[in-house]
Length: 356
Ligand code: IPM
Ligand code: MG
Image 1 (cartoon, rainbow, N blue to C red):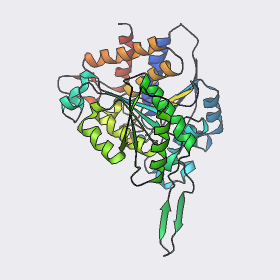
Image 2 (cartoon, protein in one colour; image 1 turned 135 degrees about the vertical axis):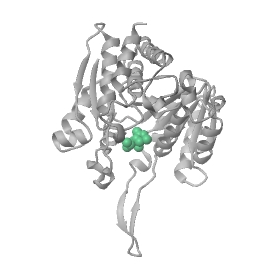
Image 3 (tube, protein in one colour; image 1 turned 45 degrees about the vertical axis):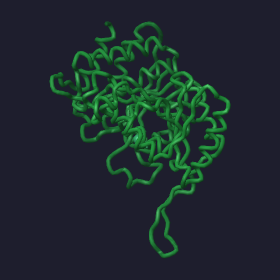
Image 4 (spheres, rainbow, N blue to C red; image 1 turned 90 degrees about the horizontal axis):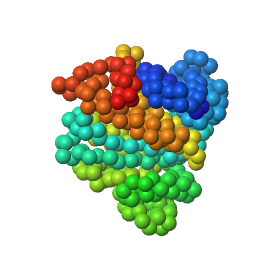
């Protein structure tokens, strides 16, 4: 198992360290584990003057999987886009062709009280948001700043998808739905945007090849509302890059905390990048306060998707369930009557729970 470890910025290093600790414990001596650490984000700038140093991107290319922490610095919007610490992640996704981003939103029963929604609305929540990751307004050209005809400053981005990009994510979505409840909801904005029209046409056409999967469509505004009103109606949601970015954060809150959410970014093969959804959280960085469970659960997704080790992934997920059941909580998921722990103690507890 050759794994590139990219802790990055903010709380990234703290939570990644816990994921690595649990990984070493779960793999044990059963097989050789090669971990290669590489700087990215501000750490990349500090080490080599580039948020995605060539050496780091080479390490990522050669690895079977990448464990990623988070990248970005407060206020980095002021830096030109490609040199921005946060953009390193976008460049890496693009370079490695990781177009399919799996963001499961699973409610651990122990955390039902941590959600801001009523328990009866979120009880049993288990949905998968599949976000297209290498197209859309994030990558469409032209983009930039300019001066309009009236001499005023303006800024522009281009929302763009070609048919093959929609097709390949649609196939992943239908295959994912097949392994779950055979229900897929495709989200777009076809009532206003041509991109949405194309998206809907292509997804519908691809769906012809999966007659066993029930396909529905929603406009993104309605999808956001339904996600808050009655999230259990969804099983797999597939959508474009920018809508997926937004809806996956919203879905995170259904589960109680974004500190619980893992993700996997996949290309055509088994190589993937595994990353907690939460980002850098600069306000709590370096204080041993961050919740490492999203990073640990991302590592479990790596075992499952890149290394085909479903049994080991199950073990990690069960260990996470156990520490929650034992009442251990970081600040983001704290509830009265539980024991407040720090990042390290939470990671250690998961290691200990692996034995059980
Ligand atoms: C995410 C993040 C990133 C994104 C940022 C950090 C560039 O919000 O992974 O959801 O927008 O894709
Ligand atoms: Mg996001």
